[in-house]
Length: 173
Image 1 (cartoon, helix red, strand yellow):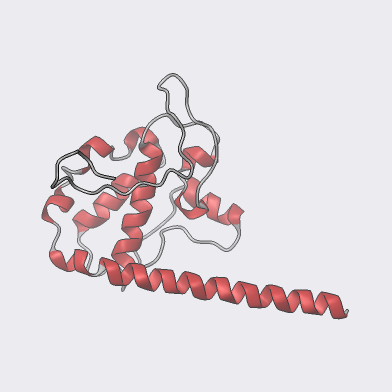
Image 2 (cartoon, one colour):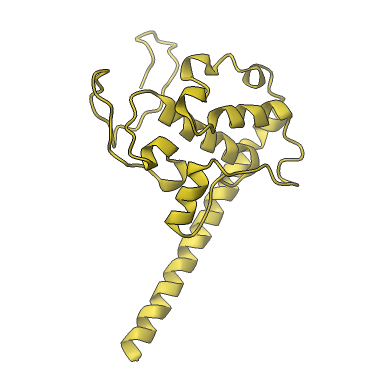
């Protein structure tokens, strides 16, 4: 999409797969999305009427871009949801050793359990780290994302092989 009708308008990316018309009078309550990116209030079925759920997802994406793996990961959904509900994540060495404290503070500001305490979209562009981010922290983002995507493909393939082995064993037994 284009932000404006001007010829030099910035391009905006959008995904309307789960879109709906929003009304300030009603909170959305549908629990949807990729589990590792879902905000705590969605998991708690509290409803959500602000962009805070999106800012949580921005925090997850920023974390992945900076280090190459997600802040919340468990094979079993109940364990994953427990991590998310308590915002239990860290900045492990050596992956985070070269990442500035300002970048970590930005991630922390986005991954707050309480939506009212999270960084808001209207304030996000003024975050000091974003304004002054060292180029070295931004140039590695594409490589980190590719590494993460490759690891997810490998895990998916391994799960398929394990499932096929279980099915073959069940069929022969």
